[in-house]
Image (cartoon, rainbow, N blue to C red; front, side, top):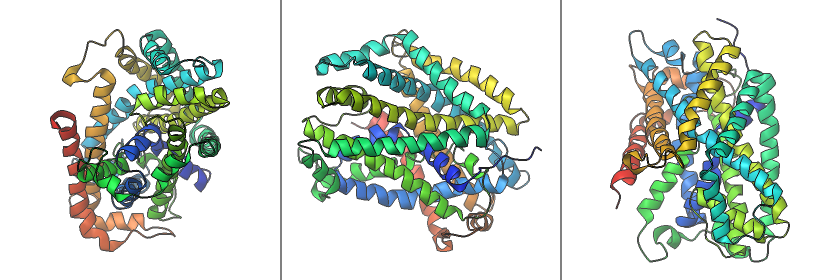
Length: 460
C-alpha cells in the first residue's frame, strides 16, 4: 500500500483532533445545560466525567488508529484475531460520519448566513419577535439554505483535496488559532459589560444547591449528573472513527493518554470560554440562556442588537461559530475520504465522489423545515432523526465497541492496547484501571445509550 501521510508537527495533530471534538455542542449545548443545572457546580461534575469517561474512550480510539495505521475501513481488519467480525462495525461507523454531515453542513451554512446578515446589519432595530422571525424566514427558504450548505461542503472538500499536511493540517491550524483568538476577544467584551457580574458569579462560583434543586425547588441532581455525563461523552466526537483517523497519522513518540488529555483540555477550554461569552452577556441584558438553535439564532442576535458595536461583535461571534463548525466538518470529511482511500481509491476520486454524495444527502435536512416539514417520523423532523441516529445510537454503540475491542481477549486485547497506549514518553495509561475500563466503563456507556432512548421517547 502507499506510504501513509503524517502530520508535520505535534501541534497540528493536537489542533485538528481538538477541532474535530470542538463543535456547536461546545457553544450552544454546554452553556444551556450549565445554566439549567447549577452553573459552576455543574461544570465541576462535568470535568470529573470528562476525566473518568471521555478520556479513556478517546485513548482506546487513538490506540486503534495508531496501531493499525489505517482508517476505520481497515483498522479492525489489521488488529482483530483471524476469523472475528469486529470489522463489521466499520460500515456502520462510516454511515455515522455521513449522517452527521447530512445535518451538520446545513447548520454550518446557517452560521455563515448569519455572519453575512450580521455584517449587513439585518438585525438592527428589531425586537425579540423580529429576530425570531428572521430565523423562521431563513428556514422557509430552501434555496438560501442550499446555497450556504453547498459553500460549506465546497470549503471542506477543497481543504481535504489538498492532502493531510498541505490542506487539512495547514488550514485547521490557522482556523483553530483564529477561533481561539476570536473567543478571547468576545469573552473580554462580554465580561466588561455593565451588569455582567451576576452572570460571572453564577458561572464561576459553585453553588451546589443549584445543582440539586431547580428554581421551583424540584430535585434535579440525578438529571444533572446524567447531563454532565452525556456532555462529557458527546463533546469529544467519539465512536465513529473521527478521532482514530488522526491517531493513524501520528508516530509513537508520545503516549496517548497525554495526547488525549491535551485534546480534552483544549475542547473544554473552548466550551468554558463560550460560557464566559454567553453568561455575562445574558446577565447584562436580562435574558435567559436559550436552548439549542434558539440560543444562537434568536437570543444572542437580540443581545448583539442592543450592545455597543453589536454589529461588529455579532459578526465576529458568528465567524467564530463558523470556524468551530468547519473544523469538525473538515475532520469528518478527512475520515470519510481516508476510509475510501484505504479501500483503494485515490484522494482525488474520494473527494469528488463524496462531494457529490454529501451534497445530495444533505438536501433532506435543507427541505425538512419547509417543503418536507410534514414528514415527521417518530415525532421528529428530518434533522432531528439524523441527529438521533448519530448521537443516541452510533456514537455510544461505537464507543462501546472500541472499548470492548481493546479489553476483550476475543478482540485486540488489554495487553496489546496498553502497550500501544503507553508507547513513547509522557503520561502513562494506568494498568491499575483494567477492572474499571473492562467492566465499569462499558456499563456507563451502555447506560448513556439506554437513557438516550428514555429521554427521547418515555421521559414524562
